Image (cartoon, rainbow, N blue to C red; front, top):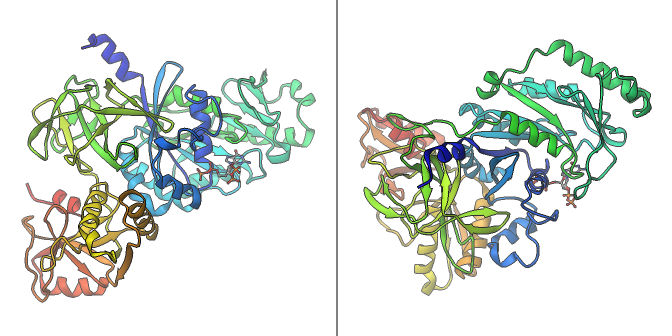
Length: 539
Ligand code: G4P
């Protein structure tokens, strides 16, 4: 065991965050530049997987590359200014919102990435709402300043009006696109000069100034660009008060900076702002108490399960957010749902797409532990006697189907594969008691999940020719009595399916049918997920 002093120091230097953005805003590019600054990669492009490391990545990432979408998420760790930064990567596509939601539950802060030309887009807005609900502090990075875009004041107005969150610009762009001359740092009073692409260790030219009125700027910036920037900066200086760390931590005020991820410009400034303000691991609510990160008892919860990340090992990894204490490889923990002790023998952290064994980790960190089927998303573990973190809500499925394989010999394999993938959270399974487990109904939130499912069935389980047969269902509800007990029979309705925990679920074609069932069963409540049903259960 390390000395207590080291333990505290280690926990307090953790910073765990995620990037939220609309697809194409530049999340992959920014991630790559952030970990380049963190010294993890030497060449741009390594995040996407250079040849040679390909074997270490799951092949269904090929699907992501083909489709130009990001659907997996991983955890990247790097050191910067003495801090240990954990970046939780989130899938970009809306059909994978549930995965992103779970990842945000494991983060202590978030970076909202906005394309300067597009402003606040639909998906950013949705993800922002999740952060707001959890009161996660948010940084804002306005990307692609090397391109023409909306006027910065207009963008800030848009963020403030659409998201009802105030912004605090720490830097300000001097010109945009073809006229982009650099970033003015409002606090340090200096100009970071933009000369085009910054590659390798080439330092950015920094000019110290007395303020935006400094005559030195006249020889550096075109007169009309300077006049515009001066006017804007004077306006925000005059209207904005001081930065309030309390408001930032409450998720009400966002420190904002500009840059170009592609040209590697403004990234170090962002990282400095991040290091100045990002909070260390915070307290976590459990069902009946609060866990403090500096508590010596180890606690954590599973927020993600990923099968077949490494095809050479065909393994399954449960990603655990450590909430308190210290993790040590090989330690024994109490698994609350199973009510038994487990040894966490195989544990890893991720650097780009390489996996490294981890022996020790601290509150705030994410560790991936090898899983042989013991973990489900939302499971709580501890070296103490008891901990039960709040449930991670599942999204209500809206699209339903059955999967078929033409070769009858492969049915059992299909059944097993579907079970694996449902434990991962990739799909939800519903069993018709009259049919049993051989032919489950699958529920998903978005169309692309079916497409990825077929791809993975073939790629990872060798189930070629599997087909999706869509069902005309759109509504799933978990019925409970007023005192919180599962309802096993509904008047006027013959079938109740079972979810993976054997809980009864009602599947219907239309919302209108639900109203009918409700009328017929006045004493029953209908919940949109098992977690919602459990949370509403009277004590
Ligand atoms: P995502 O993960 O958020 O979906 O976005 P990604 O990083 O893949 O970036 C989407 C596109 O935007 C890419 O262009 C990328 O190069 C470009 N991009 C990202 N940041 C900047 C920036 O700061 N300035 C400019 N001008 N472009 C940026 P692409 O054409 O799809 O790919 P590529 O051929 O450039 O790699």
